[in-house]
Amino acid sequence: LKKKLNSKHNEEISSDSETEGKRRANVEEEFDETPQEKKLRLAKLYLDQLRDEEEKKAEEESFETDLIAGRLQEEVLEQKGKLQRMVAKDLLPPDTSEIRLLRGHKLPVTCLVISPDDKHIFSAAKDCSIIKWDVENGKRLHTIAGGRKGTEDRHVGHTAHVLCISISSDGKYLATGDMNKLIMIWEAATCKHLYKFTGHRGPVSGLSFRRGTHDLYSASHDRSIKVWNVDENAYVETLFGHQDVITGLDSGSRERCVTAGGRDRTVRVWKIAEESQLVFHGHEGSIDCIQLINEEHMITGADDGSVSLWSVNKKKPLSTVKAAHGRHGDSGLEQPYWVAAVAALQNSDTVASGSHNSKVQLWKCGQGFRHLEPLFSIPVPGFVNSLKFSSSGKFLVAGVGQEHRLGRWWRLKEAKNGLYIIPLKRQQPEKL
Image (cartoon, helix red, strand yellow):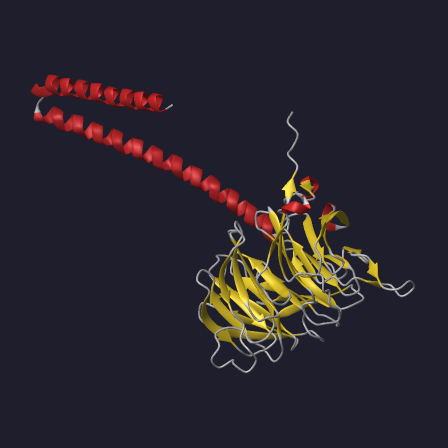
């Protein structure tokens, strides 16, 4: 192959030198042209050159316009919640041997986030620490150690259970919230501490960067939502409405966020610019987790064991699966397993839920998000406190602990505190 390339290269060089020779001959022939003719010839050459350049530019511009049009079309569909990747039908259950466990936290993992390029995972735990992991080799790249209670003044980092974590869509900022009412902002690349946001009057239970911006939404057990501008290190405003502690929050690219209101049993959509909110009812227990599937649909999980699918245009769930993770307890006194975590593969028909029945359940959203079909479950022992799909959809990460992220109602001694990286294999389309 090398030989071929070289010979091709040589050919090209020789052909260039031939034309060079011809050109010289032409110049010599035209040597006796008058200054007027020479001017004319050069002007023609120059005009030809200009025409070529203009044509090339027009070609490039039309190509770019097509690209931009394609991207804009995709964005419009995404805004309307109509951009949908149909992947559920091709997913295959992973071999248990392919599931990796990353260990580093001493206490239960409470929350995690995957960097936008799918290369790193940031996880936080009840031991107040934050760890940055390398997805490919599973190594710990950085640990921000937790501090002891009472060392807040001198310790850089959290000194209380970390409950929530979020990363900006450009991968620049990382935000973490704790039981101590604090929000910390970090530089994701270096794990350097940048700012501390104070103002919430209860544990910070939800954080989400608005996609494409550095606006941060936070939710708290004080029943309020706050809006922050991270670039400016500034507080923007506070929104009220929930009647009980807020347990989860998520946002997309619109100027709005969605929240789960715990025992007030409401899901709310907050329209930040209009300063208005939409209230949704459906679960019978405390709504403990929420995630947007796209700009129009979301999924929630509750301690009544149910998983629900919602549209932002309907006040009641489009679909609810009761006892999604089964039941436990003595005969006649069975209780459903609490759903502690939900996740959605952005703009797709695939969602996941986690509990403490030693399984992560994958679901397919049926036509128009009107029903949830179980795909398969993946064995993961312990309390699944956090779930996240990678942007590519190639893997799912479960943050697991011996206890529930919000309390110590049960303790599963056999469980390991750590992260499970679950590969999501797809069947190849049949060749015709």
